[in-house]
Amino acid sequence: MIEQTLAIIKPDAMAAGYADAIIKQILNNGFNIIQKEEINLSKEEAEGFYAEHKGRSFFDELVEFMISGPVTVMVLEKDNAILAWRDLMGATDPAQAAEGTIRKLFGASKGNNASHGSDSATSAAREIDYFFPKTCCSH
Ligand code: IDP
Ligand code: MG
Picture 1 (cartoon, helix red, strand yellow):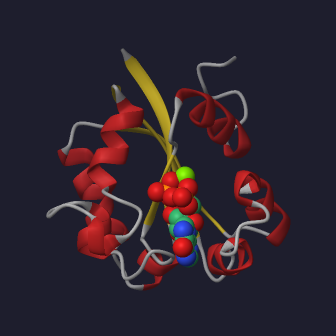
Picture 2 (spheres, protein in one colour):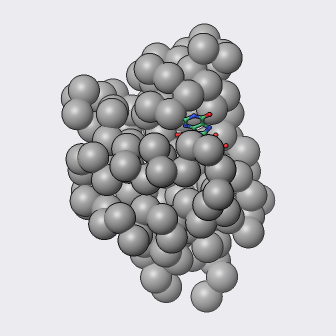
């Protein structure tokens, strides 16, 4: 099934100059990038985006990281996009991520792991709507 998912190139990867290489990987893997915007998240936006993690030990660190510099937010589309993008990113911790994945190639640590991807259809609909209202399938 053709799906859409939300991808973010996180501040670490943006600052290191990896954005173009990551976008190249996305296109090489057959995704269509149907929305793309470089933005600076406010603290409130970052907290709201990661609301599911509120109360976790790493929440404050995560929010500070996500507002530390610009990010690129994108809507990716292809067959099974949600799982396909999670697979291409690799495991949350770059040390555990498979060879050739984006987090393995460009991530430095479990926190600074270069990219975000929606983890389910429900998350994808919410996250796409969070940054690109009226884009996703839920409308
Ligand atoms: P995911 O991004 O692979 O879905 P989640 O468990 O949803 O992973 O965590 C969201 C983000 O929070 C991670 O991508 C990472 O940036 C950060 N994070 C998760 N666990 C830790 C941790 O133990 N220490 C620091 N940051 C973490
Ligand atoms: Mg997650």
